Length: 240
Image (cartoon, rainbow, N blue to C red; front, top):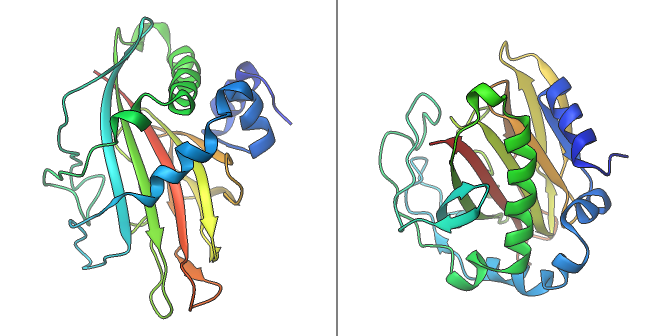
Protein backbone atom coordinates (compact mmCIF):
# COMPACT_ATOMS: atom_id res chain seq x y z
CA UNK A 1 0.00 0.00 0.00
CA UNK A 2 1.08 3.60 -0.62
CA UNK A 3 1.66 5.78 2.45
CA UNK A 4 3.51 8.80 1.06
CA UNK A 5 2.44 11.71 -1.09
CA UNK A 6 5.39 11.00 -3.35
CA UNK A 7 4.30 7.46 -4.11
CA UNK A 8 0.68 8.61 -4.51
CA UNK A 9 1.83 11.26 -6.99
CA UNK A 10 3.72 8.59 -8.93
CA UNK A 11 0.57 6.45 -9.18
CA UNK A 12 -1.56 9.35 -10.42
CA UNK A 13 1.15 10.38 -12.90
CA UNK A 14 1.25 6.83 -14.26
CA UNK A 15 -2.46 5.98 -14.33
CA UNK A 16 -4.29 9.31 -14.26
CA UNK A 17 -6.03 8.36 -11.01
CA UNK A 18 -5.55 6.55 -7.71
CA UNK A 19 -7.89 4.76 -5.31
CA UNK A 20 -6.65 5.32 -1.76
CA UNK A 21 -8.13 3.13 0.96
CA UNK A 22 -9.14 4.52 4.33
CA UNK A 23 -6.13 3.39 6.45
CA UNK A 24 -3.75 4.92 3.92
CA UNK A 25 -5.77 8.13 3.70
CA UNK A 26 -5.81 8.41 7.48
CA UNK A 27 -2.02 8.34 7.53
CA UNK A 28 -1.80 10.90 4.72
CA UNK A 29 -4.11 13.33 6.51
CA UNK A 30 -2.73 12.71 9.99
CA UNK A 31 -4.49 10.79 12.74
CA UNK A 32 -4.49 13.72 15.19
CA UNK A 33 -6.08 16.01 12.57
CA UNK A 34 -8.95 13.54 12.24
CA UNK A 35 -9.95 13.51 15.91
CA UNK A 36 -12.96 15.71 15.12
CA UNK A 37 -14.20 13.41 12.34
CA UNK A 38 -17.57 12.64 14.00
CA UNK A 39 -18.52 16.33 14.14
CA UNK A 40 -17.27 16.88 10.61
CA UNK A 41 -19.24 13.92 9.18
CA UNK A 42 -22.40 14.89 11.08
CA UNK A 43 -22.59 18.15 9.10
CA UNK A 44 -23.82 16.12 6.11
CA UNK A 45 -27.13 15.83 8.00
CA UNK A 46 -27.74 19.53 7.28
CA UNK A 47 -27.54 19.93 3.49
CA UNK A 48 -30.04 21.67 1.24
CA UNK A 49 -31.87 19.96 -1.62
CA UNK A 50 -30.26 20.49 -5.05
CA UNK A 51 -33.07 22.24 -6.93
CA UNK A 52 -31.20 22.37 -10.25
CA UNK A 53 -31.55 18.73 -11.32
CA UNK A 54 -32.62 18.75 -14.97
CA UNK A 55 -33.76 15.14 -14.66
CA UNK A 56 -36.35 16.26 -12.11
CA UNK A 57 -34.70 14.24 -9.34
CA UNK A 58 -34.85 15.29 -5.68
CA UNK A 59 -32.28 12.77 -4.53
CA UNK A 60 -29.26 15.08 -4.17
CA UNK A 61 -28.44 17.41 -1.29
CA UNK A 62 -25.39 19.66 -1.15
CA UNK A 63 -23.45 22.64 0.18
CA UNK A 64 -20.75 24.54 -1.69
CA UNK A 65 -17.77 26.83 -1.02
CA UNK A 66 -14.80 28.34 -2.89
CA UNK A 67 -11.27 29.12 -1.73
CA UNK A 68 -8.13 30.74 -3.09
CA UNK A 69 -5.19 28.48 -2.32
CA UNK A 70 -1.54 29.54 -2.33
CA UNK A 71 1.63 28.45 -0.59
CA UNK A 72 0.61 30.83 2.22
CA UNK A 73 -2.65 28.99 2.87
CA UNK A 74 -6.35 29.05 2.02
CA UNK A 75 -8.62 32.10 1.93
CA UNK A 76 -12.34 31.57 1.58
CA UNK A 77 -13.90 33.53 -1.30
CA UNK A 78 -17.24 35.33 -1.11
CA UNK A 79 -20.09 32.93 -1.76
CA UNK A 80 -20.69 32.47 -5.48
CA UNK A 81 -22.55 30.19 -7.88
CA UNK A 82 -21.19 26.93 -9.19
CA UNK A 83 -20.90 26.94 -12.98
CA UNK A 84 -20.04 24.23 -15.50
CA UNK A 85 -20.37 24.50 -19.26
CA UNK A 86 -22.55 22.01 -21.08
CA UNK A 87 -19.36 20.63 -22.62
CA UNK A 88 -18.59 19.12 -19.22
CA UNK A 89 -22.08 18.76 -17.75
CA UNK A 90 -24.70 18.30 -20.49
CA UNK A 91 -27.43 17.62 -17.91
CA UNK A 92 -27.10 20.51 -15.45
CA UNK A 93 -24.48 22.76 -17.04
CA UNK A 94 -24.82 26.10 -18.79
CA UNK A 95 -26.39 27.98 -15.86
CA UNK A 96 -25.25 29.51 -12.59
CA UNK A 97 -26.30 27.22 -9.75
CA UNK A 98 -26.57 28.77 -6.30
CA UNK A 99 -26.26 26.27 -3.46
CA UNK A 100 -26.32 26.80 0.27
CA UNK A 101 -22.81 27.58 1.53
CA UNK A 102 -20.62 25.23 3.50
CA UNK A 103 -21.01 26.46 7.08
CA UNK A 104 -18.20 28.54 8.57
CA UNK A 105 -17.66 25.90 11.26
CA UNK A 106 -17.09 23.15 8.70
CA UNK A 107 -15.22 25.41 6.30
CA UNK A 108 -12.53 26.02 8.90
CA UNK A 109 -12.80 22.65 10.67
CA UNK A 110 -9.48 20.90 11.46
CA UNK A 111 -10.51 17.92 9.32
CA UNK A 112 -11.25 20.22 6.38
CA UNK A 113 -7.93 22.00 6.95
CA UNK A 114 -6.12 18.64 6.77
CA UNK A 115 -7.94 17.65 3.58
CA UNK A 116 -7.23 20.98 1.91
CA UNK A 117 -3.61 21.11 3.03
CA UNK A 118 -2.84 17.57 1.90
CA UNK A 119 -4.58 17.93 -1.45
CA UNK A 120 -2.85 21.24 -2.12
CA UNK A 121 0.56 19.78 -1.39
CA UNK A 122 -0.13 16.84 -3.70
CA UNK A 123 -1.74 18.67 -6.62
CA UNK A 124 0.59 21.66 -6.57
CA UNK A 125 3.67 19.44 -6.67
CA UNK A 126 2.17 17.35 -9.49
CA UNK A 127 1.63 20.40 -11.68
CA UNK A 128 4.67 21.09 -13.92
CA UNK A 129 6.52 24.26 -12.87
CA UNK A 130 5.77 25.98 -16.15
CA UNK A 131 2.02 25.49 -15.59
CA UNK A 132 1.91 25.87 -11.81
CA UNK A 133 -0.19 28.92 -10.88
CA UNK A 134 0.49 31.42 -8.13
CA UNK A 135 -3.00 30.61 -6.85
CA UNK A 136 -5.55 27.84 -7.27
CA UNK A 137 -9.33 28.19 -7.40
CA UNK A 138 -10.59 25.45 -5.08
CA UNK A 139 -14.21 24.33 -4.82
CA UNK A 140 -15.73 22.21 -2.05
CA UNK A 141 -18.90 20.21 -2.56
CA UNK A 142 -20.66 18.39 0.27
CA UNK A 143 -22.92 15.83 -1.43
CA UNK A 144 -25.57 13.50 -0.07
CA UNK A 145 -27.17 11.15 -2.60
CA UNK A 146 -30.37 9.62 -1.25
CA UNK A 147 -31.88 6.34 -2.43
CA UNK A 148 -35.43 5.14 -1.90
CA UNK A 149 -37.37 2.01 -2.69
CA UNK A 150 -38.06 2.14 -6.42
CA UNK A 151 -35.95 5.29 -6.84
CA UNK A 152 -32.18 4.93 -7.16
CA UNK A 153 -29.89 7.81 -6.29
CA UNK A 154 -27.51 8.94 -9.02
CA UNK A 155 -24.12 10.25 -7.79
CA UNK A 156 -23.19 11.31 -11.33
CA UNK A 157 -26.47 11.92 -13.17
CA UNK A 158 -24.54 13.48 -16.07
CA UNK A 159 -22.92 10.07 -16.68
CA UNK A 160 -19.29 9.48 -17.51
CA UNK A 161 -17.70 12.91 -17.40
CA UNK A 162 -14.84 15.28 -16.69
CA UNK A 163 -15.31 18.25 -14.36
CA UNK A 164 -13.45 20.86 -16.40
CA UNK A 165 -10.80 21.41 -13.73
CA UNK A 166 -7.21 20.28 -13.20
CA UNK A 167 -7.49 17.92 -10.23
CA UNK A 168 -10.28 16.18 -8.30
CA UNK A 169 -10.45 14.53 -4.89
CA UNK A 170 -13.52 12.49 -3.90
CA UNK A 171 -13.59 11.49 -0.22
CA UNK A 172 -16.11 9.05 1.23
CA UNK A 173 -17.76 10.35 4.40
CA UNK A 174 -20.49 7.77 5.00
CA UNK A 175 -22.50 5.03 3.31
CA UNK A 176 -25.78 4.18 4.99
CA UNK A 177 -27.99 1.26 3.91
CA UNK A 178 -26.99 1.31 0.22
CA UNK A 179 -25.54 -0.98 -2.41
CA UNK A 180 -23.55 -0.26 -5.56
CA UNK A 181 -22.00 3.17 -6.14
CA UNK A 182 -19.06 1.80 -8.11
CA UNK A 183 -16.62 4.39 -9.47
CA UNK A 184 -15.38 3.74 -13.01
CA UNK A 185 -12.42 5.43 -14.70
CA UNK A 186 -11.93 5.72 -18.48
CA UNK A 187 -9.23 7.27 -20.63
CA UNK A 188 -9.95 10.06 -23.11
CA UNK A 189 -10.76 7.46 -25.78
CA UNK A 190 -13.36 6.09 -23.32
CA UNK A 191 -11.49 2.86 -22.76
CA UNK A 192 -11.89 1.46 -19.22
CA UNK A 193 -8.89 1.92 -16.94
CA UNK A 194 -10.23 0.67 -13.64
CA UNK A 195 -13.09 0.55 -11.15
CA UNK A 196 -13.52 0.54 -7.38
CA UNK A 197 -16.13 1.32 -4.75
CA UNK A 198 -15.70 3.84 -1.96
CA UNK A 199 -17.15 1.93 0.98
CA UNK A 200 -15.49 3.11 4.20
CA UNK A 201 -15.19 6.61 5.65
CA UNK A 202 -11.95 8.14 4.28
CA UNK A 203 -11.79 5.90 1.19
CA UNK A 204 -10.74 8.34 -1.53
CA UNK A 205 -10.26 8.77 -5.27
CA UNK A 206 -7.71 11.19 -6.76
CA UNK A 207 -8.25 12.10 -10.41
CA UNK A 208 -6.26 13.95 -13.06
CA UNK A 209 -9.24 15.58 -14.77
CA UNK A 210 -7.26 16.41 -17.89
CA UNK A 211 -6.51 12.75 -18.57
CA UNK A 212 -9.50 10.65 -17.53
CA UNK A 213 -13.27 10.47 -17.34
CA UNK A 214 -15.02 9.24 -14.21
CA UNK A 215 -18.51 8.17 -13.25
CA UNK A 216 -20.37 6.44 -10.41
CA UNK A 217 -23.15 3.89 -10.75
CA UNK A 218 -26.53 4.58 -9.09
CA UNK A 219 -27.06 3.55 -5.48
CA UNK A 220 -30.07 1.60 -4.21
CA UNK A 221 -31.30 0.95 -0.66
CA UNK A 222 -30.60 -2.38 0.98
CA UNK A 223 -33.69 -1.92 3.15
CA UNK A 224 -36.35 0.14 1.41
CA UNK A 225 -38.00 1.04 4.71
CA UNK A 226 -34.89 2.72 6.19
CA UNK A 227 -32.95 5.87 5.26
CA UNK A 228 -30.34 5.18 2.56
CA UNK A 229 -27.67 7.61 1.39
CA UNK A 230 -24.11 8.17 0.18
CA UNK A 231 -22.17 11.11 1.65
CA UNK A 232 -19.01 12.37 -0.07
CA UNK A 233 -16.82 15.46 -0.12
CA UNK A 234 -15.60 16.53 -3.57
CA UNK A 235 -12.68 18.97 -3.79
CA UNK A 236 -11.61 20.37 -7.15
CA UNK A 237 -8.55 22.45 -8.11
CA UNK A 238 -8.42 24.75 -11.12
CA UNK A 239 -5.71 27.20 -12.09
CA UNK A 240 -6.81 30.79 -11.57
